Amino acid sequence: MRRLSKKWANYRRRWYYLRMTETTPAGPLYINLEPTNACNLQCYTCSIDGTRKRGTMDLDLFRRIIDQAPAAGVYEVALFMGGEPLLHKDLPYMIKYVEDKGLETRVYTNATLLTREKAEAILDSGLTFLGLSIDGDNKEEYESMRIGADFDEVMANLTTFLELKKERGAEKPYVSLQMIKLLENPNQTIDPAFRARFDGLPIGEMSVRNPHDWRGEKGIIQQKEKGTKYYPCQVFWSAMSIAWDGRVVGCSADLNGKHILGDLQEQSIMEIWNGEQYRLHRRLMKQKRYSELPLCAECHAFWHEKHPRLSLLLQIPPFEQMRLGMRRLRPRKYREELEQQSPGAIRTRKLQPK
Image (cartoon, rainbow, N blue to C red):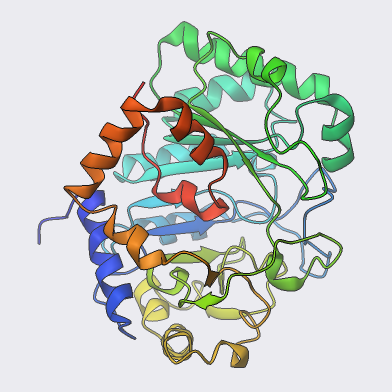
């Protein structure tokens, strides 16, 4: 059977979601695969509580998972979940292995370990997308959020990476700088002086977002009021999150691995995807019985003020082309909208027109 383009595969997943089917013939569009859950920082907004055993993914297990991914309908692999991926010594190999299978790759990093040597290796690997988590546009704010990091060192790492990318004339990876700002922070935009640091360098976008609610696990973080309209979470129709030991957790927000839906040491991607636990979560989400799911009961992700199904419609041609045209006509307004995107919105974002 001919493999669909990622765009049409995405439309297909959305069709399953709109119909609320419990079993789907195509597996997850993307997977979050955790190279390691170890981290070198103790960030203020992180929900990791230390209860999960630390480790790194074995390469044999990694290859078994990736080898079955294309046939399962996977198009994109984020080599990231609960730790700092650059702590895995074989990360560049993992990226290249995924890319060689014809899948897109994403890595999100705090950039503290992004040395020149690692920058060269990542550029050589063919990485599709690099997300830089830089939670502050000045030293004081950043170091109060990213505890254990040095703002000046991280800025030097970013500059070196971007200069190397520019010297090579490389299109990949697309670089996205993502900044978390607490709701109590009176400044919810990125300082123009911070933006100016990267003038002339190949950075695709900078966006601001507020902290995740981590399903209520990080109670000290102030959250916006949740929406009043309930719509089932799309995760169970589009994504699979895999811990370093092969266990499948409910979603990428379950950093402590409290809710296990399967084990890829013993099962295949599709056996888990249409297995009892995934079908149960889809069914209870559809029936608005989310309170019966410990994974989901306290989560804000499926409460909205705007209709999420309308946003799905706007991503289908010709509406999508109309939106692209409006972005070109009003680039400033689009940049402001981009900075207000929710964390999940990045997943469907494309390379933006210059």
